[in-house]
Every structure is written in structure tokens, then in C-alpha cells.
Image 1 (tube, helix red, strand yellow):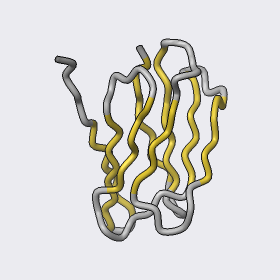
Image 2 (image 1 turned 90 degrees about the vertical axis):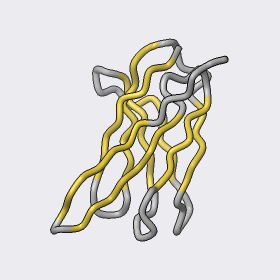
Image 3 (image 1 turned 90 degrees about the horizontal axis):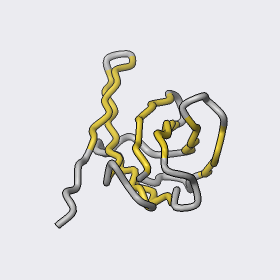
Length: 97
């Protein structure tokens, strides 16, 4: 069976801590972005290629702790998923097979 890896992203800001996961990684299509802590919401997700070109922008509804995004239409490559929580951006590398 295919193995599923979950990547945890953490950053610190003014003593606060926020964490997101992006799974599965690598992926062939869908990626689930999830907030680990109860206070952090996902407001926006940008997907860029490794050169920084914006490929997709997803605006997420209020108070969302998770968002499933599809990158099935993008060619196999490495992409940067940038997650905005209303104050800070967090970046995560995702491999598309």
C-alpha cells in the first residue's frame, strides 16, 4: 500500500505558536491542509511553483480549521503551499507525483 506522510509546519510569533499539517505528501492530487491548534484558522492558501509563480489561490471561509485542495491539474513537480492565518504566512513544500 501507498505510504502517507504528514508534514507539520510550526512557527512562532509573539510567543504564540501555530501549526499546520499538509498531507499526503507526496500527493497525486488532493492535499489536506489542517490547523493543529484550536486558535488558528486558515484564511487563504496560495500554491506557487518553485520559481514563485502563483498557480492557484484559495480563499477559505471564516473559522476554517481544515481545507482540502486539489493540485491534480498541475504537472508533477515541487510546489510551495503558503497558508495565511490572518496575521502570518507559513510555507510548506509539497511534492506532486
